[in-house]
Length: 286
Image 1 (cartoon, one colour):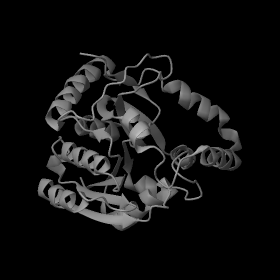
Image 2 (image 1 turned 45 degrees about the vertical axis):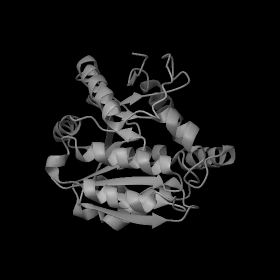
Image 3 (image 1 turned 120 degrees about the vertical axis):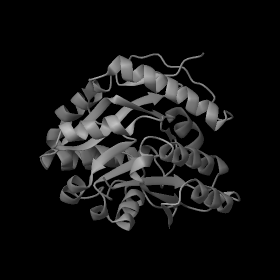
């Protein structure tokens, strides 16, 4: 089983590179490690003072790793596509797309692999998401926790604890795919193509991919036998407008582009949003 991992991150702030280091470290310390995954880190924009030491530290953690740079003006779609093109999709059976605000528990990949084996037309599969938020998501009250100063070991211990509870609570359940992270069959991407680079900033390109995957005869799923942490509140408050900007104008332009391409997708989108209920475990105090 050949697995390629595609991470896109800004590099102009020490917080971004530190977060990316934690994401990569947790990934290669997880049960994915036995498959010797190739990890590509695509950095965007100018480099902070810690960048070069960060490069050295990352390569010390995992040797099967490479790095490329893309301009600050790149959209999410352009940055991700640059990574997939550099990696060479045909070299891998599976492609993992993840962010610098993901943390992987020790055990998450094997349930995903079993799910793919039992669903041969699953093109995109995401794990369940453990989230830290500062607002309400759907109808679930959430609590914002300040993790910025927490040591990696302590944070990963909490992620592992919560992931075990979630796997027990949601075992056997499924839902619509959710980004990030998402595991993609290389064959599926080669058939339907990479992200549409007409989407600006960082929105709607993932939903467009889901529709194209479905139109190509593939399936999209969330496997709730596996859970991964996504630090969304940190992403949206600390990172702000990233990947070329993600302001209101981009959101409107991307939404219009999506529905111009897929006028019949309103029903799909309604089902997608409804399916987000129940897919999340929320960190609470204690």
